[in-house]
Length: 193
Image (cartoon, rainbow, N blue to C red; front, side, top):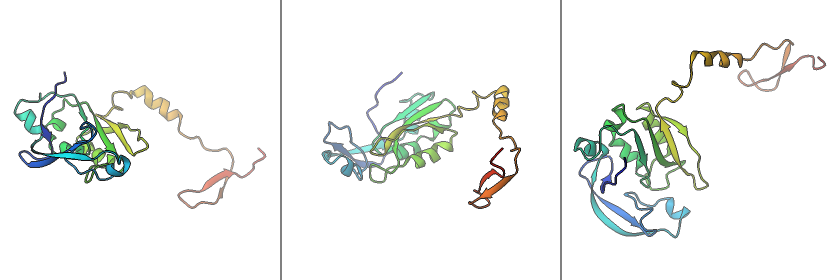
């Protein structure tokens, strides 16, 4: 079940921060400054700053505001996703979380935001791995991370199929054309065969 919680998530509990309210009905509001976002979307600006106290996901779980058995996490927090994950170790280690969808980018859209590599490295520490990613022309995406999705799919019979794809030795003598020891092109010595 889904329910909204009115709180400012980050990596620390009880920090007082300025929350930036954006001119597009709040859609681009963030605890981070606009950074590259200002170049990509020049019509969007910050109109107001609110002084808010931060909480972590772990604190919300500890206080019973969030359930302990969350199985899917969706973060679209305008560049603060990496910070929020730093404050979510209980959630990331409890064994209930199966997957998460995280908005991220090739390079940060917001000042001091995380990249998809930062997010992937963080989540890999908790056995959550990149499964799907498709960047838009502005360099951001909603990336899907899952527990090892390959372990339940592969069975012993699948290894036999994979083994069939192993290259067979070439029946012709080969000659090296260009390249070096780690990347040469090999062609049959007798091309008339």
